Length: 199
Image (cartoon, rainbow, N blue to C red; front, side, top):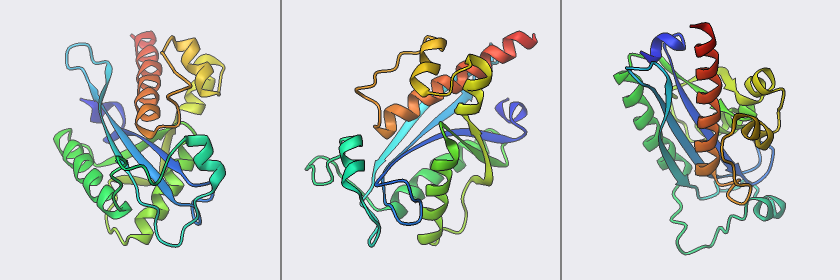
């Protein structure tokens, strides 16, 4: 079971799109999470479902125009259907906790590319919304930058994907759902390649 592969941690890929680089002052604009499971027959990791939320910028936090230009997010788009941080995290945490319990895991562990960036923003959002219980480990993460450097000798996400022969469309990048899904593919490929070498 997947709990035995990661010391009773459930791996969950998280990607955030934000209104800047400061987790204390810049708003979260999108949250996406991709679940990872283990194939019972092959014992290889597989990419699961991705959950995506458009977020209303938290009152008083900054959204920098440079970030909007970079991510191409249009806050006033009529089909954006944004919800509050709290509603998004409440829903997402229920999904993760259900998956965690089903797999016999004690906690979830955040996976990301530059994972500490996403973890810092998530931690601030949890605190300002007075959420008492996060499924995630409070400080440990698994980072595809480090894994990519070890396995492919690359740290830039697009180059890691190129070495691993994982399709990556830069035109679709900086959408939380797309980036989360591709990051999950990268993570699974690296772990599966490593596990094959051990056998």
